[in-house]
Image (cartoon, rainbow, N blue to C red; front, side, top):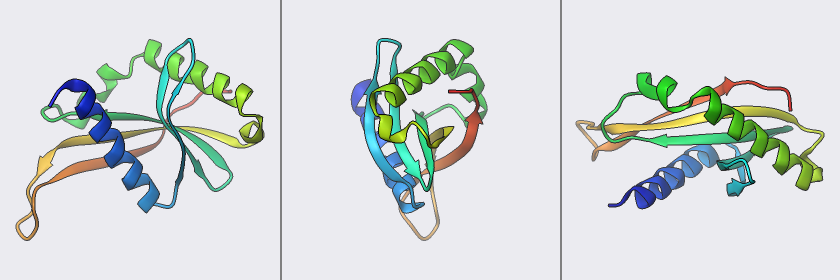
Length: 127
C-alpha cells in the first residue's frame, strides 16, 4: 500500500474512532495556502482541528518529532483560514487534537487491531 493510501486509511480509522466517541466530522482534508488539516470535527460547542498520524512501526513517543513547530504553525494558520471562510463556526471554542494510529496490537480473542490514541488539546494557539 502506498503512502497516500495508508494516510487515507488512517484518516478513515481516525474519523470512525472520533464519530464513535461522539464527535461530528465536518470536513476532511481542509486546505489553505498554508497547508492541510486532516479532519475538522465538532465536539459540542467546540470546533476541533485534528492531525492524524498513522504509523506501522514507530511508537507514540515519536510524535514530538513529526509535529514540529512549523507543522503546528501550518495547522493553526489553516484553522484560521477555515474559520474565516466558514463563519458559522467562528464563535465556537477551538481545539487542536492529534489522533495517533500505531502499530497493530494482537488481542487473544479478536483479530489484530491498530492501537488508537486520541490526544485531546495536543497543542494550543489563540485563533
